[in-house]
Image (tube, rainbow, N blue to C red; front, side):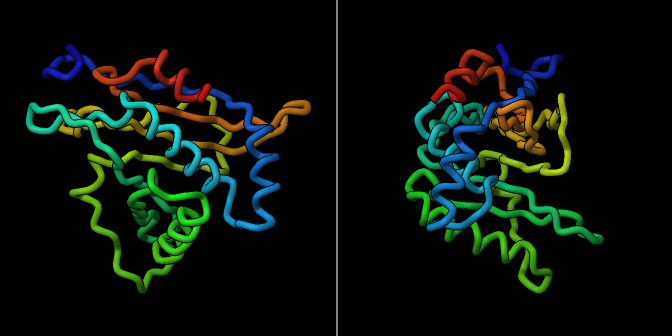
Length: 194
């Protein structure tokens, strides 16, 4: 029903305030030897969880459904100036341990932030990728992510926001756009519990 041409928007937008206290403590313990940012740490862990949740790896292309084994991850990188954003695409994240991922992430991030490097052509990759963004200065309580009716069916999008303390807990806004042909709030709950 949600993958056929319909008049309604087939996406669900959900924004949560995630308690990341334990994850941040593990990140701080690992950072001494690994480095990297908390966002990179969250991206790698989200990717490893997405690998185990088949619903998030489904895409419909030209009327046929596919289960992707290791989709790329697309991350918009804020660079300011006239360009505002550059694209970063990470391949084979499901198959990398955290150290391999972090080396790849930091290398691609550096390239995206340097205007002399060639921009990444993501037009063919983006519809297949997991879209994961970061808005570290916005403590949003609701975020509706854009969509196009001709967009690849099945792709989910995720955004992390500004971390903040609430008592002894460290919270972070987390927005998810889920294609209802593949996923729903119950599947998102399973993803976050894992």
